[in-house]
Image (cartoon, rainbow, N blue to C red; front, side, top):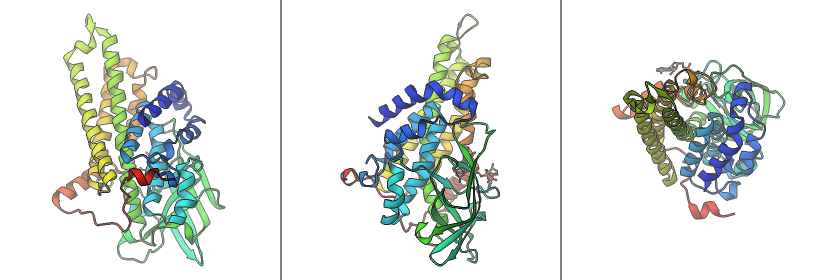
Length: 393
Ligand SMILES: Cc1cc2nc3c(=O)[nH]c(=O)nc-3n(C[C@H](O)[C@H](O)[C@H](O)COP(=O)(O)OP(=O)(O)OC[C@H]3O[C@@H](n4cnc5c(N)ncnc54)[C@H](O)[C@@H]3O)c2cc1C
């Protein structure tokens, strides 16, 4: 039901305007309010926290449907729900859940995730933003860059250094949920991106921003672990979305291969075109099984960092390849925005960069295989899905 509802929304409401939004580099004004109204923004959160009480697999299926139309829609799910709200669900106190998570799950407040800085991307421990304690408050300073929904969001899950004196750089960071209407906050949009042009990406600057100590999520020094746990959920949505993008490439390619004729027959009859289509079928099925496995593990409350990283790495690379081959099948028409496939290609590139570049995922996979990397238990795990409890008011 959720899948069908989201498919209808994406196909009937967004698809007709997406090309123009992409050209204008603007998110359509109705997108966020409609997603809120449809309950998508809190789909896999318990009803008592303002969500729809559905499971993590539903979240994946929703992301697949959204990105089959445009990546910018799935990015909303990744940052608002995957990286931020599920982070609060896992790490925030009950009081913080009531204050921040409930309005986010209902879509009354939009949330983003502020980890990356101009000088720190893959190397999260190099973050230079700082949080200095003063009585019952912290004073936050620093620049965040490449933040999806920066100018649309009301809340950011923000990471900065609280404890620079510790030996292990991973213990230096802490996480804060910050309301973006606080004095000292400046958000700006960034234009000229290769893809996700119908989405919003920007920067967030903090200059002496005062927040109550009650806005700190988790313990001081726990920020790195919190960020990585949030990425386990964000990466899951990226993997599921990339699966939808592969499906869109496959459907567009099949359609065109049966329309276009060359050398007196449909190009779909050419074996080299068939090879590309067969590869898309293979990639779609594999990507789908990989994200479904992660969703199933999340439902059971099993740690899934390894499996989610693999799903994200595989499906984003496969979607980039599928989009490139879809353009090839469309020939010169694929090179123009008359067809959707050029947008698919531009959109697919971002996902092999954000939420862990492909290189970082390869290091992770090799680390697990070689036994250099192991997942230690966390002080807060992502709650397993519980259908009865999640449906309770
Ligand atoms: C469209 C978009 C949206 C984004 N949204 C968000 C957001 O909402 N919130 C947020 O916090 N961030 C966001 N990001 C930022 C994204 O997460 C970072 O770009 C990403 O983590 C990579 O960091 P970087 O760009 O600084 O690259 P770098 O870390 O500087 O890497 C540059 C290159 O070096 C390689 N490299 C780095 N370290 C190693 C290594 N150890 N071994 C091998 N190769 C290595 C990388 O793989 C890459 O190819 C977004 C980015 C994009 C493009």
